[in-house]
Image (cartoon, rainbow, N blue to C red; front, side, top):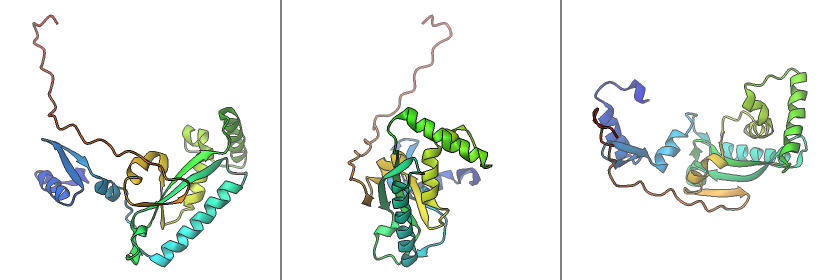
Length: 207
């Protein structure tokens, strides 16, 4: 978005974002995104859907979670499911999407056995003509297979990785649908002290 701004309009944008609570000043010339800004940045551009449609999509998602956890084909299991976002506001009839965060853990705790089972799964898929995008897609297929199955190409379900996003999600309104509540400390406030640039060394300074 910033790359498309006309010269001289950046300050006006920052003031508008600050007034909307999307960013806050850390010190002179330095800004950081707020939790509200994070939610906006991760929001989808999809059209709002009726709550009944969202509820149905959520029910189908939870059915897929049960399938993953009982089906031996999947090497990963869903340990946590957290609902957040507009679905929690019961007075909202049209929601943006079904915001969910999932924690996927391996069913096999032995790393060598997990890698061997994952390799056999990958080799079977390669033999059937499946193509992998990169080496990470191969090594972590056990995880990505679960994530893709849960998403199921749904336009309504917005899926986040709990491990990557938990510091944000657990500090905003949310509801645990599966697993235990985890207390995640809020990030410490920024250091209010101004940043001091190191003095430039003189050319004739031997040190």
